[in-house]
Amino acid sequence: MTDYNDSPELKGSVLGQSTEYVDVYTPSLLYPIARKLNRDVLNIDESELPFKGQDIWTGYELSWLNSKGKPQVAVALFTFPCQSSHIIESKSFKLYLNSFNQSRFASAEVVKQHLIDDLSNAVNSTVKVTLYSADDYNCLACTPLPGECIDELDIEINNYDIDACSLNACSSKVVTETLHSHLLKSNCLITSQPDWASVIIRYTGEEICRESLLRYLISFRTHNEFHEQCVERIYSDLTTQLNIKELEVYARYTRRGGLDINPYRSTHYNDTPFNVKINRQ
Image 1 (cartoon, rainbow, N blue to C red):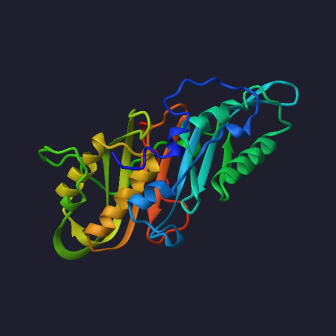
Image 2 (image 1 turned 120 degrees about the horizontal axis):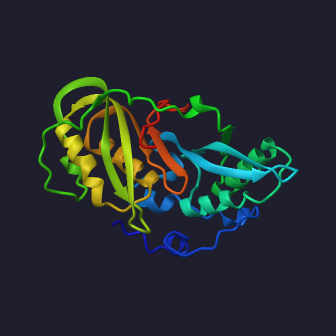
């Protein structure tokens, strides 16, 4: 457990609290949390971030009424830049989306603009929003993860406390490779509910010992941190402990409350990361 969970910001979160669901459009339900809380712990300077990237959320339960009172539904894709000063606490995001349910809007474009404006104001950065119809299956098709899966390595696990020092290279040879694992599990910082994910790691640098990488990823199993924070911790630990020239870390978390969160951090890429979706989402 990190030492920032007693901050007033986190204590004021609606996570883990009994709440009343509001079905009338209410932007004030959004609850921002400063990224700085966790980045200070990781010694990340927000004025000079060591990575680029974004947090990609999928909202599967968005609905509103048209001007005649007829329900409309959509799947929403939200893209938050990692340079934003804040993230949105996930339960408040769910409550906010539910507040559209019994509100009338002239069109899907009007709904989209409200989403862009409200979320951008909450995180102090421009948020991209794309709405898909319920019949647009191609936008969320499941795909295999790129690279080699390391989950079948025959290793023994005796420690579930994160130890970045356990990461090591198996040779000084510089390689470019993509690895992935489905065994990442962390826990919500506030409620300790389990968060399940698959993670992709693409890098150029000294060849990483795969056994040490798998042990390291499994060691998050009892760790309490938000999704975005876990990915930034993985990125920071890999770049600190290993001689890596280029790195991408992308986690696809399973959904909770109709939302999934998929953080992506990279040394060099600005655009959309791997176009993937796991079957557990």
